[in-house]
Image (cartoon, rainbow, N blue to C red; front, side):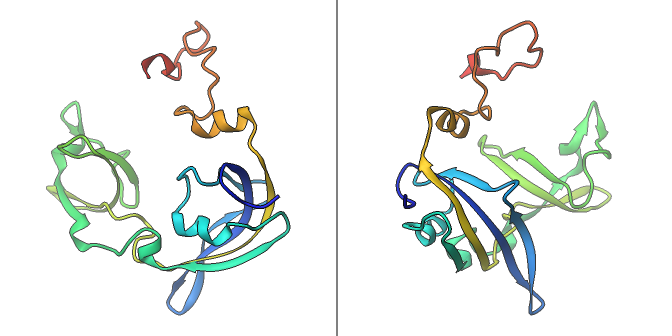
Length: 185
């Protein structure tokens, strides 16, 4: 079976970027922890999917994606200084969670969800980078297709459910203290 629309695909690969003239490993998908997804559902970068389309189990791949095909160019304006009071809990700066290198989910004034990395903590501000961690990088993928099959109902549910495959049957049960919040959808 070939990789095509709505097929369940599993891949192993090394993702590298060039750093100081050498390839630096950024991510590795292994046989024990492969990358699995439904092809054609918008879960992966469009250019990534185009490069593996038509491959089948056992086929190897090696390709690169330029920044404009992946996570875009690095934009200096996406590095901003935010007042420290934005990071206060009960009137105190959250020193435990707000540390250099930490990645934080945030929301802008329009309610858009953003992910930012803490670059620096200054006396009155926190310097945040809202670029994707791989923005500006050419991504190199080397790997192999290890599975291609028609997706089962369970696989579709696990990949498309907003709560990571929760079956919703126990969401409101007394044992499920946190709940997955399915009833809120």
